[in-house]
Amino acid sequence: MASLKKRRQSRYDYLISRHLAPIEAREFSKLSRKYPAIKRMLRQRAGMWMAFSNKARSKGWEGDVKQKEWVNTLKKFYRARNWVAHRDIHGKRTSPMPSPWEWYDAVYKNLPDELKWDTPRTGRHKMDQGEVKMEKIQKQKHNQEWIAGLRETARRDPSRRAEMEKQARRLGGRL
Image (cartoon, rainbow, N blue to C red; front, side, top):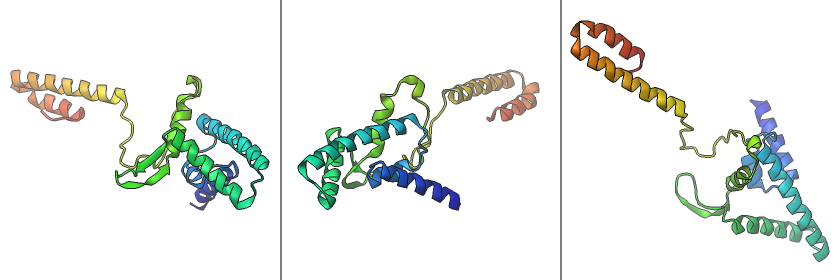
């Protein structure tokens, strides 16, 4: 378990060194850097940092003033795009906070189709039950129809009821 903590901590440190805010780094340290959306986000943030550094150098900002202005720049970045969460995952009101996953989703949408692949976003929606595959729904529907047919056959021919019950149980239903 210690290696997982080390790995996540090293990802967090890497993201902080790439000028992500702590709240962003905390969320994205759950993901590896191999995802195309994360790579694009890091390039985007590097561009923001370069522009900010040039502005800070021209205005003579140093130390705490520079840090404060960087935080303000990040706040403007999120507010301009309306990526600020006002409620937590349980629906309770919170003070407005940046929502890093909104940024991730916006970057992901703009990726070319060949770079879009599923990202395991653990902890994003704790109440979410996950994706339901269409094949699974179709299989369940097929099984329900099959069981309905078995019921009809058992109703018409009571001598085959035991056989039909066995098939229905195997399909996950009852007569």
